Image 1 (cartoon, one colour):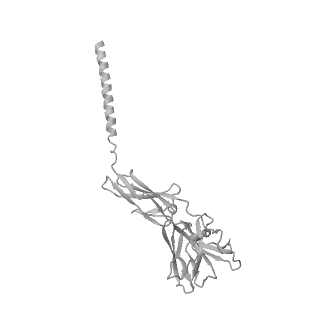
Image 2 (cartoon, rainbow, N blue to C red):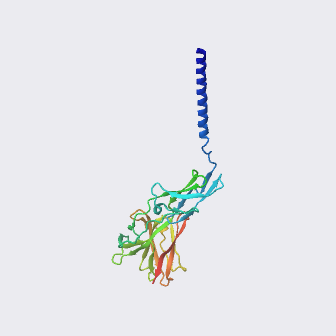
Image 3 (cartoon, rainbow, N blue to C red):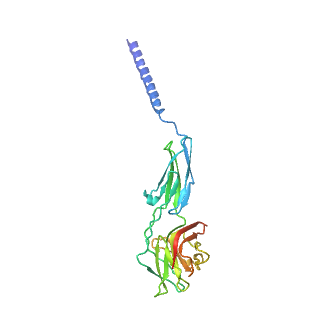
Length: 282
């Protein structure tokens, strides 16, 4: 009986070990039900880009390891989720940067002190605060495997004109300039000449010493005799800290009427054009 009892105990132990082995096998079987690691990978081009406000940039995504090479595009920022702040991206990867907050015309001209030669020591034009988001992330996510994606960094900067207006010499005090600016441009009368000096005021990003300005014209009927690149005193900032520049503009009495573009090139040879920034009137 004792022998049989010992045998029975050994059998119980063996059965327990067998059960444990079966249990371990079951656990391994459960783990094998998880999908194998994905072979899908995503790359994006370019991986970083500077985009001016209101401008566009084409991004391209490449998917490997899957027959479905489509991706879902998205744009995000840790500072904001609003499209008006971070921009948008199309299903084909075209990113559109947000337009700067609209710059309304000043309610009333401001008086700005000027030196005897009509170049001011600073211009303070009141405009609403602009976009506070500096960088955003563009992301391409594989539609074949949503765990696989690639990202690019967009810096919202560069040469971007936000407002164009005028600084006009005060008729009662030639040492003062009356300045106002608007987001849609300004009118210049072709009756202007060297005896009635008008300064064009431009605010935006990328406006630094060394930037050059040109107004599209037929010949030389609209001229900028004082180049900002040669007059560092013509640079200032708005009340919101936006770079600004102001320079003399002379319109010939016979200048062709109609809208003109303001063509700007910065020291990095980056070119932009503010279409219809100046309208030549009678």
